[in-house]
Amino acid sequence: MGPPHAVAAGSGPAVLSSLAVSTELPAGALVAVAVSGLSLHRQLRAVWPAGRELTGPVRDLHTIARRPIHRRSHTPP
Image (cartoon, rainbow, N blue to C red; front, side, top):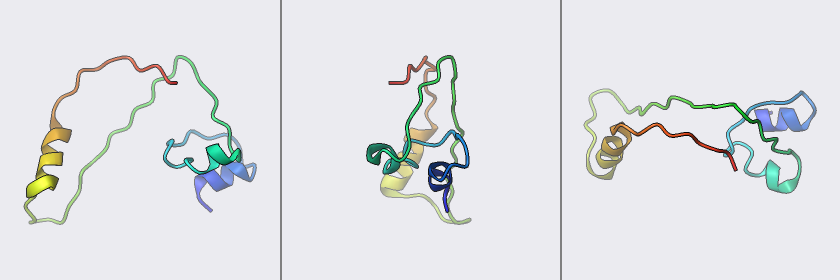
């Protein structure tokens, strides 16, 4: 049983990725609640087998992902 299913079964509220609940929200099994004044972010990592060189589109994506971004406020929908 994954987190969305545990929450839907009544285990309590949770903070989950919108991707993790992409089926449950439209089906009405879970309800999204807006929370003001809360800024959540996560650190992502790119991983691949040791010794393998990135090439082609994978290398391009990695290059784009490493570019610095300008911090900006985000207002949830």
